[in-house]
Length: 452
Image (cartoon, rainbow, N blue to C red; front, side, top):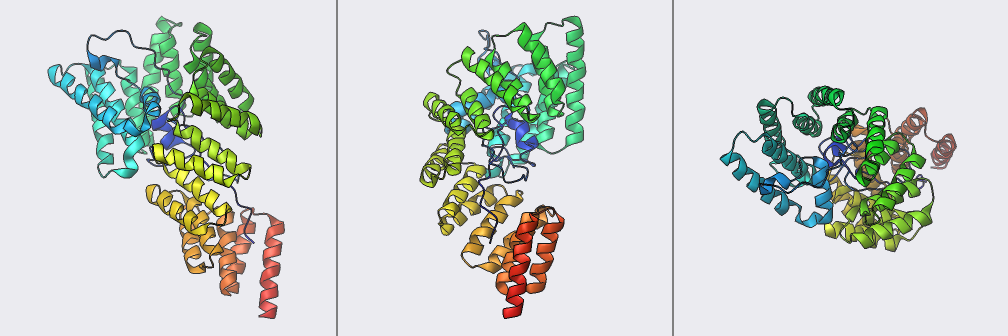
């Protein structure tokens, strides 16, 4: 009847939390901790750490700070790394940072870097919590104000332009985001014309290029940065992400191999490499990497989510559910609810599956595939009216997904609505659904019509 069940997941945003959320070719709209996966063919793509969209700019260990706030991260990436060490303590940590920055700005309103750091804190707070708070858009408004103030105080502050670009990116104001990324690139071009060996300028420019999806330029800048400083594992992790965006999985794995040699305690590198191994079907290696990532960081929910997806592929649904549940207990996010729903579906536990789909949809209602999957669960319970409602919702969000029409066709057929079923099967075929399955469906329709 229905097409084979697949385990959907979202591609990894393990570095640029703010951008990836949005740009996550995976998830449009402000998604924060709940990035929106772009509808894809049924291929299991591991959920990685929060993807701060675009390769993250490696944050160097700060020099001793004369003021405590000077040691705070000034990039989304810097916060992402901190957050994944203790995701459950996210809000309190960032709220404390913002409070300290408020005091610093009150004492010295000309401290442009303090505005950049506060803007970054607000963007990452939005990225991780927007699905759960009513004042989410206010955070982006405040972040834009912070970055704008920093630019007014220091028009040559490339980090402020990048930060504001990310805030606009999260806000889906892409023209403004691109204008800011381009402004940052112009400033960094000038800096590199004066000093072509400025590693920070190269990595920052790579970050800005990634916001514009110019991955060849990202890799070119990171190549130069790595040649100048081959001992920084984070630059290699960033380049591996750029390679993965281009579909160059082998190159991404090579970069992660080197990053792990440089830093054998990098849970992020193991988790990322495991996701790539899973992508190319090297499941034993993938499992070893996810196990290692979790061993290094027992609070790394993205690794639990990825390992859960791997267990699902292997048919070990109970272990998958256990890993998904562990990820949820650390810090919930919609993709892991959706994936756990799929595991329950695969076990035939449709009521539990529907409960998880309900949560995933409530947290991120813009993603059509979850409606399809909940519709499938209702279909299996013979609740065809509710299944059709979900398929309708999915088609409303993405009218070019053939599986939604195919599934709705079966629901109509089960109700005896032959004309609607035939129209949906033909539409699915028109959109590229498997012709053999459509032929079987139309044959079933014909048989039912003839035999009553």
